[in-house]
Length: 181
Ligand SMILES: Cc1cc2nc3c(=O)[nH]c(=O)nc-3n(C[C@H](O)[C@H](O)[C@H](O)COP(=O)(O)O)c2cc1C
Image (cartoon, rainbow, N blue to C red; front, side, top):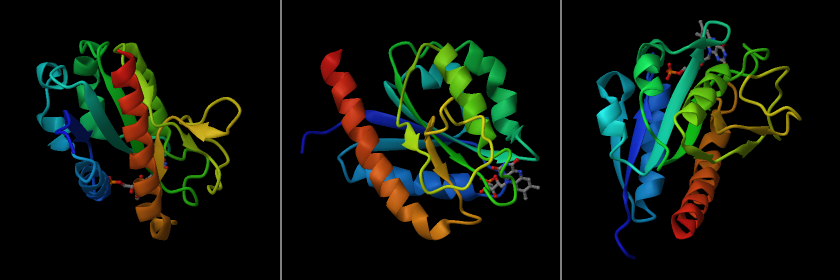
């Protein structure tokens, strides 16, 4: 297998779940020959992010649709980041039973901000298999999320399969983008 580009996997977390899922995603990406640099959003800068052509970003939702605080602190820097040459895949963590009106809302928040950097966002994910009343991460027809939705509180038994399927999907999508450019 030819050596692949470096991927930045950037996560924010309050209680560790988003980091843990990030590690699973990174491990899966490495099995495709990519090298993955994992970083906590509280340690990154625009300059660092702009060095990558392929980024994965992970965010949990807190307190009725609230943004994880390190991502919130990074918002101003993200607005100044030019990712117009990059491809970004998003994943979000939430709890669909406890917060069914706000499920993974913060991923929807991040999606809007990442689009504004000029990045191409890949890795949209079907909404089938989730019970959600409302989510800012869903498209208008509520058929898909803007990234991988993970629910460690209610559906942890589905996580490994979801991660494996999604990583396979984003690798194919990224390779298509790379060929096209
Ligand atoms: C007080 C509290 C508020 C939460 N609010 C939301 C919410 O609004 N929407 C949601 O989808 N999940 C919500 N969750 C679930 C967390 O997003 C979930 O547990 C996640 O895995 C935490 O990720 P972290 O460990 O990376 O911080 C909440 C959990 C707690 C305990």
